[in-house]
Length: 471
Image 1 (cartoon, rainbow, N blue to C red):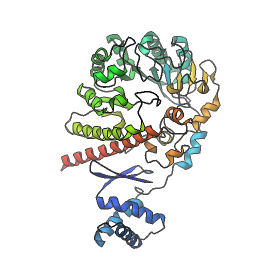
Image 2 (image 1 turned 180 degrees about the vertical axis):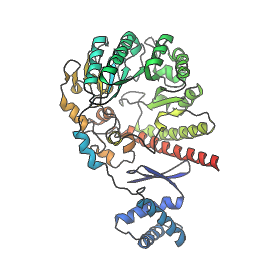
Image 3 (image 1 turned 30 degrees about the vertical axis):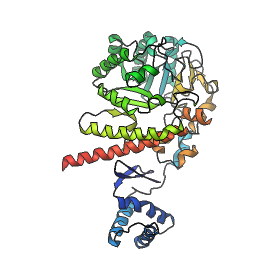
Image 4 (image 1 turned 120 degrees about the horizontal axis):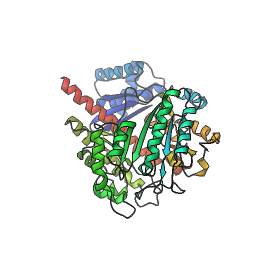
């Protein structure tokens, strides 16, 4: 499978199955799909291919290149094919049954340390922390059992991850600290290493909490939507007051104290700010170097929900942001934008490329009272209740269903060029918008494809910058 597109003047060709990216001239860009068509028709010699390509170009009324130039272009294209860098076969599908049959090893938990929140964010899928249920804090005893479950079900895996999540986890901070201490006590005896992370709205953040977090938390996620007017509109306190002025100075302190690493500010854009590139720029101007601003996922009935008619504006905004991203990188004023960070050389392992985040199998969410769900976005939906910290996983059928969730089980993923980058997308979004975890959230897919295209173009532009330096 080959995907071609033009962005910022670059003619880009992505060989999907190998992951190879080629930046080519206009002539090669036009010829590559014709050569692919010829090969599918079993036209294989260079001479025959050249005749076929010339005929197709003539039929389309295009100005033909000289015979010599055309032959040289075809020769280069075929050499890429021989090198396994173009028109490659999909070698992954035959391995998918091995992933389904592999032993289930749990390696990450999302601990819902607090089903309560001190903000009233309008787009909150957790219903201000309640998750379709009741307000509650996780007890130390429940959290301890969750960590014991993780250790017991992690097999030979050494590195384990625990995210303290909410609601707002800082509302139950003592239990967070106690659970970190308990987790550390398990490391030596069981040959495990815990990577703790924290997601917070920042309202309760103070120097004591920051000192502890900088010692124990591998990453801190700081919720902020960008410009003050946007943030205060969507992330007010329960009384309606904005929270921007309260949290930004604290977030700056976090970023500085962690040397601009191992944190990120995480925002959500809605129909209220389709110009979200301005929010990303604002966060960068405020001194944040690790930034994620993501599209809201909401039912059509919400006035802030993204709609199909918004897609063209959003795609243009990603293009605008990509150019700004390149400009700032070149001026040594750069920042990292989560959706533009793409590894074209290594990237995730095959299992991750095919099956994504591991929700329901490798990754589970734990409620304050100890129930297991496939991930935080399924919490409160009783049809996805998998078990609890006392009895373990009872609904193994749910786990087994999630084990079959992969890019080959999703019909809309099979022919999508971005499938090995998004790994099939979010199972929860697919379920909520299509009724099946093997369905698709079409709007989200459209935006994901654009982000992948922008990310690859950025790589090309920054590579050009490096070449210019050498020359």
